[in-house]
Length: 326
Ligand code: EAX
Image 1 (cartoon, helix red, strand yellow):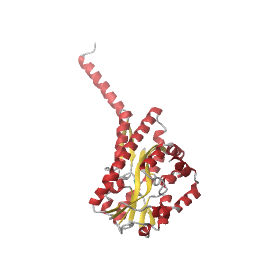
Image 2 (cartoon, rainbow, N blue to C red):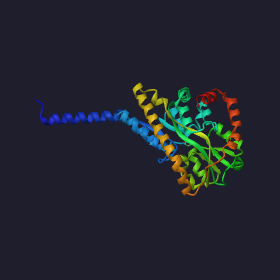
Image 3 (cartoon, rainbow, N blue to C red):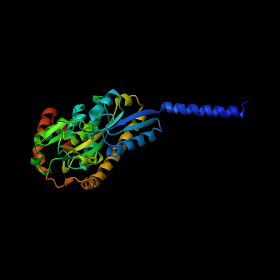
Image 4 (cartoon, rainbow, N blue to C red):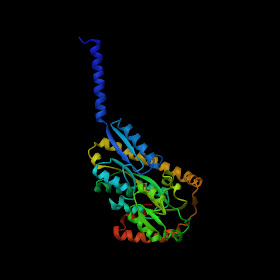
């Protein structure tokens, strides 16, 4: 006959065993991005974490690594391929080096507004591009957002391509962007994002270009005086996964990751929209001159040759599909 004491010990042992089992079963997911913990990417990372942990009932625990603490975007994408990082939220800046089909998205003045860009990414073209990533040791989970990019610099107000001539501008490590800035007469300097603040501070480069959200979240107003709302290119973000983790999961688990990525994208886009308006006021308060009514036609004309160079190298199929669908 079991005594009360042994019964209690039995229950406690079982409880302890279950706790140990749960602890063992939880898989830690390393999620990285380049932006600060007050950025739209962090809003997206929080949504990813909340959704995946809830859907999996704690089977997956997400550890967020913001601020480029795991390296720049190119390095993190490599990390996905070798399995040192599990999930990355990244701009498409360096992605073309891995998945050339995504270069099309970085063509200047390709999308007119947020609605059009989001629609193309959520539609067939975007879904095909996500699938393409599977051919390059990456898992495309969802299209998220960085935003329309604008030019900042420390030298002068930029109202026309003429004013941008000779400026040393940091670009992302993306051929299409570098070509566009060469066409403008600026001197493009590709650099990983985590190095950018110091480069601006030390005057290694005069300017950079990024969406309002990034300019705000990175305190670029401390090292840049002038902002021109050139909106010269829409910058998507991708939520990417590592095949080394994801290929080993069940269909149900994979679906949790997809859903977490979609929730992440949605939360990020909402934050981008919110900051588009509030951010400009904030940057003015911080002392930046903000040129809002830039005539973009001459910029568009100046970077037009980037299209020819792009299509010569990659063909026009993707571009035609985007134009036909939007
Ligand atoms: O993805 O490198 C960049 O300028 C990007 O916009 C930034 O890392 C956010």
